[in-house]
Figure 1: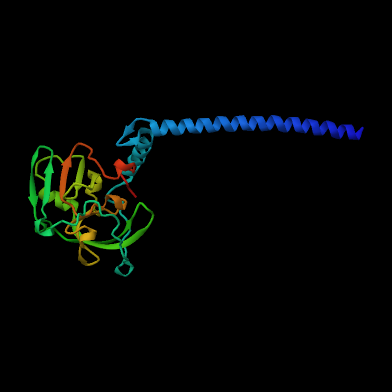
Figure 2: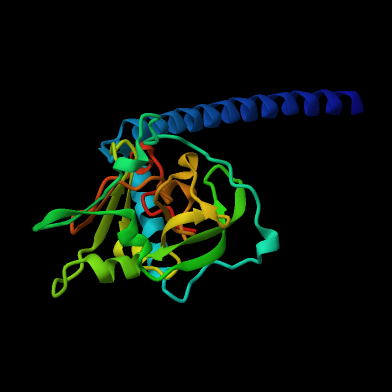
Length: 253
């Protein structure tokens, strides 16, 4: 009798195992098909800024939160000179070898305003600020760097036409416009946003964006444009080199 009971239990177990195996296989298959369908939907969904719109909407939501959090009182930590480290010159888009620093001029424009040009001496005549902050690359590494330059807010106060309302955005590009970034006005006018001409107590080198670069510690390095050739104030959300590659347009820390 006990032998029969063992045989019945074994048979039932085999049947149960078979049913569970079939069920698991079916469930796994459905999940795989659903996952593949979701992947197909995500990758083939309509694009916004050359990025599938579901991904772009998530990035836009993150940017909205980061923008709301950002304020003049939200500043990145400062460090002592003894903590300054080497900053590798990551990326050379827009830094063509045929660049002639003696011909450099900064083109400034705004919606409805004729462009005008400035010399480096016009920028260096502004109140000089020095700060030591952490430069954070989106690749995951960081360096502590000393910067010298003028606040973008001071630049705007000096050179943006008086009596006009400031637009919502700022667009900056290299002289050849191969590399460009877009900033919301609040980020551009943040107290730690500099137009820098010095790095680690020395004039900028060509590989680090001489003669003038953007330093914005509240953003990832992809926003810290080297070798600024033009600045445009605009109410139209400007393009951004890395946002068009699928990265966050705001790129805040």
